[in-house]
Amino acid sequence: MKNLYAILFCLILIGCTNRDAEALKTYMQAQEERYRRYETGNVAEAKQALDEIIACAEEHRGKLKLFYGAEWEIALCSGRLALIAESENDLQTATNLWKSAVDAQLQFQKDERAWARLTPNVRVPDQNSDVYKAVTPDDIRKFLTALETNKPTAWRAKP
Image (cartoon, rainbow, N blue to C red):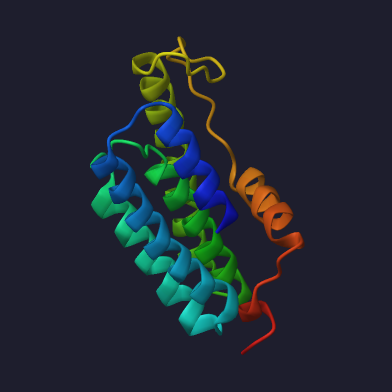
């Protein structure tokens, strides 16, 4: 929740409209609730929460003026679903989900650079380049492992 307030404060500083800030706040609060269900639920609940996060991100893709990270959210949630599929020995599903995660992360790079080009005072690595570096499933796995090291999820311990 701390991150939500920091994001909203920054957005107010850059001069967004109240309606844009409110739309982002509503989106972030709904997603936070889904993430809580992912973190505290069993496997079925975690999968359901991740599917809902992805669906919401897809629904809002390009619609929230102050949010361009839908693809990043989709990439991470697809990776999390792939980890769950691997834990269930469903390797075909895991492979498909890793491909979705990599594709979404590549799209995120494109979206991020396009956003940076159009937004004054925003700089991202290689923002003027049209060469994109696809990450690997292992890169996403390492990122998720590091991200969740300090905040383990309940589904890993629950059948």
